[in-house]
Image (cartoon, rainbow, N blue to C red; front, side, top):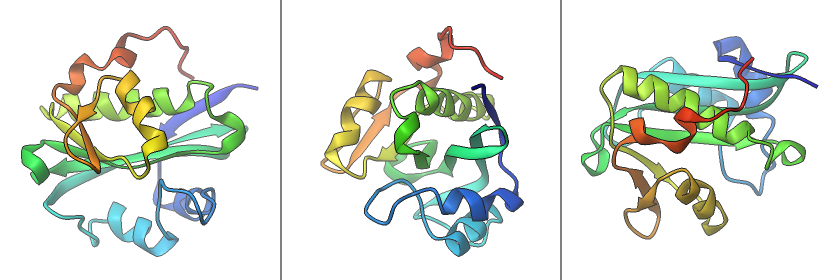
Length: 157
């Protein structure tokens, strides 16, 4: 069961927006995701461009990550959404998705990256990948180019 990773296209939004369960953090409704990627929806202090990656098995999405450049909290970028279906959590899918977004940020000279944690259960995930607490709701990578996962040994497909 090989997991592939690729940049998301607008045609992917219907499938990825339906992955998240209603009680879970990590995404938004289809229309909001589409407007976000087309630059019609702007989170606070968001700047263009936006980027999104999809993790899939046999072409079926199992997770995604999205982010954009920003000035929020004196940061350069923001991880907007990340989600992996329950049966593929703790299998490095989220780590690879964050790594891909980190490379995108780094290529654009964005190093200080913030993320709204969503719930406290996610804090250990971000902390293990180098993020530190910014405030009660937010964490930050002060230099995402130093993300431990950028030097991981997990194979990319």
